[in-house]
Amino acid sequence: MPVFPKGDASYRYFTSRRGKLYFITDKNADKGRIVSVSADLAKARFGKPAEVLKEREFLLDSAYEGTSHLLVQYLENGFSRVRKFDWNTLQADGELKLPFSGTVSDLRWADDGNTYLVAATSYLHPETIFKFAPNKKKPTVFFQSEKPNIGHGLTTTLVKYKSKDGTEIPMHLVHKKGIKLDGNQPVLLYVYGGFGRCLTPEYTYDVMAWLKLGGVYAAPLLRGGGELGTKWHTDAILEGKNKTIEDIAAAAEWLKANNWTNSKRIAVYGGSNGGLTAAATLVRYPKLFAAGVIINGLYDMLRYHRSTLAWTWLNEYGSAENKEQFEYLRKYSPLHNLKTGEKYPPIFISAARGDDRVLPWHSFKFAAALRHAQNNKGLVLLRVEEEAGHAWSRPSDRVKDQLLFLMHVLKM
Image (cartoon, rainbow, N blue to C red; front, side):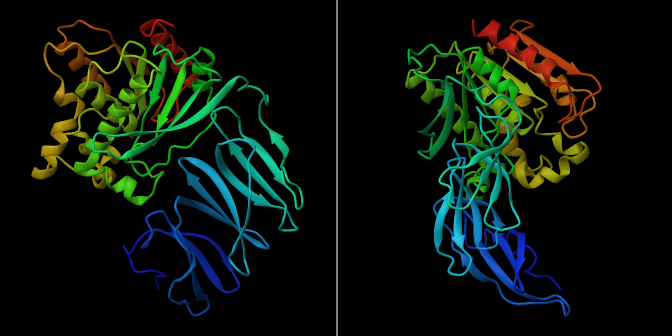
C-alpha cells in the first residue's frame, strides 16, 4: 500500500519517531515543508499527512533527528544554515552556526543526542567536521582534512543581479580580500543550471588553483537549478531552458557593468549540462566572453536523445521527435546555431573517450563545426581523455591544461 498517491509530489523520508514517519515534501510548498504520517507497519496502514514544519522563506534542503531537537538545513542563497526546533513544541530553538558560509554535507549526533558532529565545506575551506556540544557557544574542530589556512587572504561575497526578464539571481563571488574593482580582473564564471541541482559552495583544488593565480570565481544560482525551490527548476526546463542562457549572459554583463572585469578578461566554464548552457551562451553571445571551457557537454540537442541514458532527460530538455519541442531545441542547440563567418572566442573542449552518459561525439562534432564556421581560423582546442568516463578522469591533468589555456587567453 503506498504511503502517498503516485505522482502527487516529491516526498523524501528522513526519520521515524513514536509511530510516525517523517518526510520532506514540496506538496503545496515550493521551498519544502515537513509532514508526518502515522504508520501501522504490521498492517501496512498509513494515516493522512499532517504538517510538522511549514514552508519558510528559504529552501528546506535536509532534516535530521536528534533526541530533543529536530535539525533542519535550509539553503539561504546557496549557503547552508542549520536550525534547531524543539521536538515537543516544534518551536525554533537556535541554530548550529558554522564559522564560515558554506555547505553542510552531513550531520550526526553523539549518544547523548545533544552533541552534534557536522561535516561542512566551502569554496575556501576543505571538508571539516565540527563538534557542537551543549552549552558551548562555538563549535570545535573534530577533524580537518587539509591545512586550515589554505584560503587565507580570500573571501566570498554574495551579490544579486537581474536577468533579462527582471528575475533577481543570486551569485557567489570568491576573490582576494580588498580586491580593486578596476574593471580588469580575470573572472571565471562557473555555470550549470539544470535538473534541480543545487549549486552550493565546496572546496575543490581547481577553484583554489584559479584563486591562487589571482582570478575571481563567480558562481550564479541559475534558473534550472534547485537552490531557490522547485519552481526555480521547473521554470527553466523544456521551452524555459532559454532562461538559463539569459541568466548566464546577464551575470557576465553585471560583472562588467560593476567594474569586476571586461570582455577580454572573462571566461565561462561548465561541464555536462553546464557544458551545454555555457556553449549555448557562447554561441548566442560570441562577444560577451574572452574564452570558454566546456567539459563533457551536450551540443547537438536535436539528436542527444538517441544515445544511452539520454531518454531519461526528456522531462528536462524535450525531444526533437516532438514538433513543438523540436522548435525550441533548435533555437538554442549549440551545434545548430553556429554562424558561418562569425568570430567565436577561444574555446577549450574536453571530452572523455569512455563517457557513456554524454557520449564524446557531441564534443567531436562541435569542435569540427566551430572550426568550419570560422573557416578553420580561431582557437579551438579539443582535449580527449582516454580511459575515462563522464565523472571519472585524471582531473589534475585536465585542470592543469585548462588553467594554462585560461592564463594564455586572459593574459594572466
